Length: 531
Image 1 (cartoon, one colour):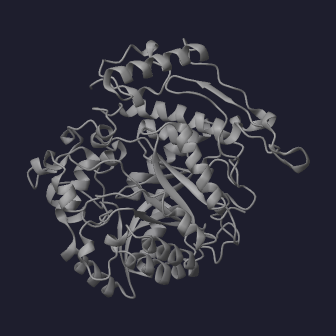
Image 2 (spheres, helix red, strand yellow):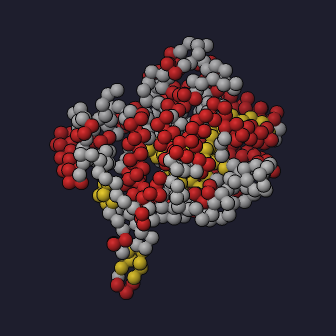
Image 3 (cartoon, one colour):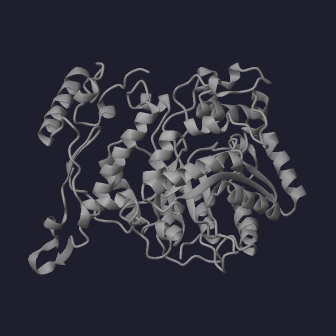
């Protein structure tokens, strides 16, 4: 039985899933709290921070540690990166994949969800890294799929303008198909023969060479890693824009959402489930995790005191830096009490779903002005903040489950490890008392089994990636106008010209017409057209 299915009959409450939400940076969603005694945000560069955190989360039977990531700084606020750096607002940033093996070594059940973009590296490299992580964690790895949107991140790899929002998702869809081919379709389960008498460990006839020639990517290769316990990591996806929802309906096993109100969120959740049903998937198989920051005391009064103390060390400017970066709105240019609208977003590069959420009003947020944002942005990143006793916070979470149709929460920290200690010591026991959280999850399950139940370590049969499994695999037809031979020649010519022109794999000419795109991933070698 799936972990979040109710036990005890129709009237029983469904079990929710709790992930700890962190980031390999000082100021995640509550910048400024590094100033508080006992906060360890500034020690995330050290391995013992992550090892101790993993042990704590394992102790509390937390489902997973969900790690955000970003590839550039936030420079929309006052059209400068300076305040992002000064306030340590998601700056600097270390690689979240590096501590995973150390955390896996000191835990048996904690899963790990890592954010990685489809825009900054070829799919072959990402496939290798996640297969390795799935091996090293014995199947406890998940991938939070993002497409990348920051100008600063694209400039860091030599591209002046990010790819258009909707085209990023079209490219990401092909990226996923390449990955499924490598993870699911390249290796047979019979490839390992371990025939000592004939000095043969693998059977090359059981390892298929993938020949993909699409609009954005060309690949002729076997997967370089043998199949890991899950083959494909458990798939998260962040974003509920039109393009993001369509993408999620095909690929996501869980979606990560952020909203200030469950009633604002609910139509987006319903839409994704409806789109999944049209794709032939069980709509309930897509699990929805909402951002939630908790400040918990043994009484409501104690929690309120904690909150007031947190406000004293919060970085208001740091919160505004994050808000401006996410929404594309330079909030420093708007009068304090003027309503913020979507028209204020002058920047094309932003998180579209967040911009939509935070220019939509609700009972909780009847108006959005710079003054309101300044009051709220510095703790919890404008997501819901539950302040109170464990009973009060659990009541709030139940409301999100009922009204927003969410299946779990990514709980972000105000302070670390303080927030996570409160969750483990106070909130989880209360959720168990209510029948909302399992008493104990069986040891040794993969990340996917922890969501869908023991025995479902691989992709479900109704998932689009299952069409690429080894025994049913059929290669996609080349993109119109492309043949493997032409793609290879185009790629060789492209690389030769780039090297001759700049000394690196990048050229400064305007891109060719759509039908003339070269065989190599276009964004790796060319500047995209200016908007």
